[in-house]
Length: 207
Length: 207
Length: 207
Image (cartoon, rainbow over all chains, first blue to last red; front, side, top):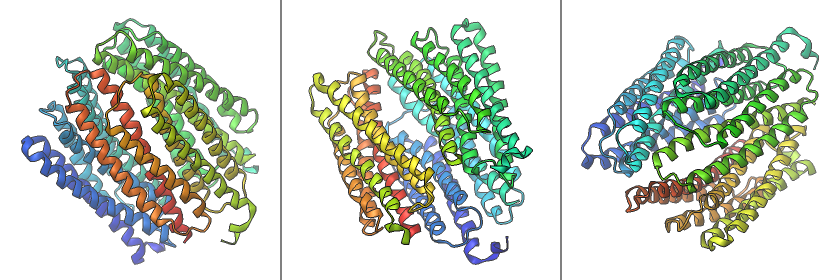
């Protein structure tokens, strides 16, 4: 644990915090695009892409660092894993924005904004938790709340699919388009839970 | 190998055996729901969900134990991997039951019950094999048989998809619903093969 | 690094080169099936399946070797990971060929052949790079070019989906079939990028 205070270790925490901060930005764009007129979607997707690139860069910085570092604050494998799962959260939110533009989707079911609100909350909690990796303190409320939110997302996801497949819309192509967006958002919620699992297993090992 | 007889190690085997026993229970509910009248599906899905929760608990117990144990009977990473793949088998069988209820699916193609029979057999073989991890004896017939069954499942899966997409049903929504159930079941068979691969690689290392 | 010259280590490089060489063969069959009359598809798929089986055998040989070797040229985990990602590339190209036969697909959108051309190029670059793992020299141009090609594949993929979902074809079943083939090919391109990422991270560690 003595390593904890060397600059090198610290910067791992800084990189994770930075990486998670992009998730907050990304989840905000996701909220924006749901409410935006179709004419503004391209611009929002472009901003989202930019955020995703920066997040990507942060991930690569972590990978390069862990591969070239002699000493790491916790297992290399765990650092890799945490960086990769944070990256998944970003990619999946970006993919959802992308599909909305790509498929020229019209009105999405109302429940989709509930899915997105959960993702916004998960992003904030994750970004708040990352700096606490240094002390490994007060992390349990983070992963407990993430698990709760993931269950909420899951309920919402299932309700949306049931409505989509048993609803009045018989236009199969529209069903396919909506289903894909809904699934990307659900996958993003799952990815946030994976981040929480990683943090939990790291905390258990380090404690 | 001397570690093998200490209580601590033993309980890892017990936990894996317990985890696999839930797969047998789950595969039975899968068989039941196929034959059950629609009015009984909710109840069956509820039982399945209960089994899935218990399996989840068993998985977390393994993870907590490996993360907090000084000595483990085999590589921590392999224990994690084996627990995770067993968990995947359960989740995928549960997801299939779930979709049948969620999508209010009517009559499924006959081939689906063949997929499920293979899963029942795979579950039993897997549950029977777990206790043998202690001695690492007589495991090869297990993974050989699982591979054989996975090939059978794959043939069945491909035949089902061909019938589904080239069959007379032109109702795309129904095709989508059936395709998802069939895919979850195929993914479950793949997950059982992944368990067998894990066991094989552990056995090779330990032998 | 002194280990590098022992026969044992060398054969790991040989096995990776062999494994990658099957990707070149597989990508060629993919090109062939796109241009072939429907009557010849079965035969092409059979050849593809044969190549996939050989590639599988090469992967298992690597896994067995790493599990039973005392000394490995680089981390066991990295060897496992590289073998597994090479295997993914093969499986995904094989799956695409499979679907074309299974779904009795008619004319595929023209953009699909662009996807395949990228995969052919990626296969060649990957096969050329594997022997260079021994010296760890001149690998950066490989992964840089793979990343460039993956971006090109991604652009093509997105354009294809947009055309598919916003095009005139209102036959949802056909859209589903084409979408699956296009997605397998995109997943294959992603898998090639994963191979390049693995190689990069190995090279960074070893350098």
